[in-house]
Length: 126
Image (cartoon, rainbow, N blue to C red; front, side, top):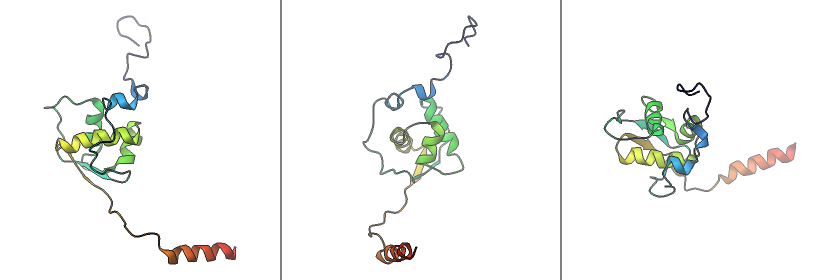
């Protein structure tokens, strides 16, 4: 509700999920994302973004990752944004030195054939 006229307007409050993800990232997506994946953990190392003109989402990421690492997927869920948009925002914060990240190790081996065989045999016994 607007304080001036007492009439409710949906544009008076934060637009939230009405704003398309590409608007939050200013149209950027998919480049220079530091190999971030869903399970990459992010933690704030420089909590203050006062010296920069950050959007609301940046401040929220800094607050939620302060003192407790959060995964990319957790951040996306809490911000109600697409993972692709969150990766862009996190990349900006990494580049500015406000957060650090750690991605899970990449496994270069294929699936364990012994485990698959044991599961298959167990299913056959059912």
